[in-house]
Image 1 (cartoon, rainbow, N blue to C red):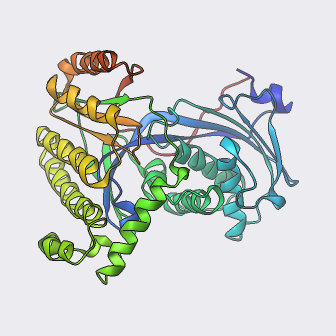
Image 2 (image 1 turned 180 degrees about the vertical axis):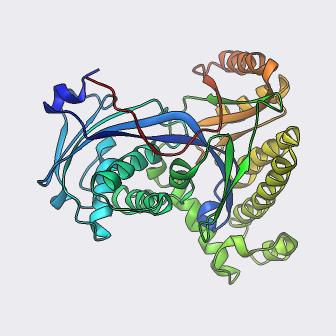
Length: 381
């Protein structure tokens, strides 16, 4: 791999890392002001960075497919002006400047172990790693939550993806050995212990290798539908709709909006149930909640696909306590809660089901709740 020194003929000022995430439960609730319950993955995006005093921004990614850096000027950045992977780090620099931080250029070297297109928030990991680097290089003093909001604004306004805040908050704020209970309305958060090892459990992740692009409009249409439904019900957001009022609310809505509302309201309840189980140590009880969440995403929200449905069905049939797709949907990854001794059996069963269906074999691994963005040791080279 081309080193920072080889590219830029200098040593980096430091190294920063930010993780991808999986969401245990609480899907498509963040942009409805609801609760989410993600964990950070051990897979990270790593940024080596050197501050420049001019306006030149040089970006190199080991996965970008080019031998030379992308060269931009920070004073010329504008929404939509940078395409492809380079748009994400450029967006963060633009968002910092838009917020009034007079940041300059930089030389960045980016590497990542977060699978792309797998619904594991590779884009948020990249944004948050760059945000953390700039925060330290310029002494901005921004909190992790403020950096997450900066990264979200970058993706919303510069890249053009109307994502909620969960991915960036998970990447910045998660803690090792815990799930992050985040209230998307006011960004209050609580670290909930999630000790899989003590319970004899593992969280299996199956990347279906079905790629998706949330900028293609499907995600935006779902969000717009939820906002239309909330407005029709006279609510600031669907989070305000109490479960007891759901039947009455559905009667007041057109058929096309009812499934969206039903998913958001019932998913809120599933988050509350999951947190209660984690707090009492009843991790086995989380399994049925995961499976119910997948059924809601499949039948009401319409964000599943044949590959993710098959992965869930095969995992549960092979002994998983529960399983569901995670992330924005339209492909991506499935998580399955399994007894540790059965993890290999369940993974093999999912692979065999894919082979029989003629699908590309999924990539599977186990996930442990890992730390959020942080400054990492800089290696020589």
